[in-house]
Image (cartoon, rainbow, N blue to C red):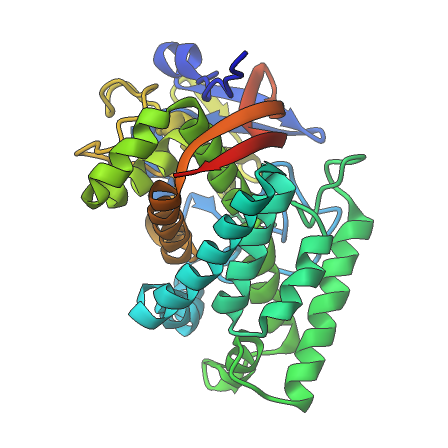
Length: 387
Ligand code: EMZ
């Protein structure tokens, strides 16, 4: 019997249409989730009322205040400082667009797909998506490929483990590792991101070790489970829809649109928080200064007032103002890298793989108050067949 991965339902629909927001509890700290596309964009833009530069970890939902003190940069800073920090790293994170970078990414992805076809059967999260993410990250950081072996051994999330949603022990592995790498780059400067950051200046002084660590934590944590969900969901979708795989092979020119549509539909990051700086309200609901809201990208990306047939994947969707990479000042720094990974992956799969059969899987369901959202898979075993 053929097993289907089943796509990704939208748990927010009714509340988004009828009310537009919902209050949930996060470790005894309430969060008002914004569900409509228009509101999500408006609040994301208004950094004065809805700030990111609160206590480190507090804008993340679930909050990470208990597992880290380091401020992630530029993610947990607001303009005008945010603009200055972001300018320091922007060019570096645009490197994935260079043809030479793309060629190196292709070598790495083709090797992984070949290895997968040889094995036939793989567990996609650990043996495919995590490896792909970690190997690609060596390019983004510009450090030797072998380093990916260590990162793969950390598993899919650096702050979460099977036992607990917020695992301080696990987080410390990452922090200690980054401290060590920074010291190494000071002793032996190279051409890697650590060295580049250590040489960078903020308002006429060199970045501190703590600031460098803040950028590096974000680079490691922010692009990890998000990329893994993105890749795993894409594979599950292509397994369910062999006709789509064939279409991408016949019409490679639509791959760029498919890359965006997958971000919209899968929304690998469900939401991101902000801390309210002044008493305000959301519709009829009062929100006090110092409380939290979240911008629910996943709900906004299914908003029926913006997207036609929002619960369908339309590979060549024309108008696609999705917010899967966030919106406004804080839009995803790693988006160029993520897009290139998906583009090259879809090109490689459509060329080399005929069909993918799912053997079994366990869904990864997030629980946000009354909403249960499937964000991806804890595991999914699949058989890749060559074309
Ligand atoms: C933070 C976040 C950034 C957070 C774009 O998202 O990703 C989460 O996975 C991390 O836990 O610390 O980096």
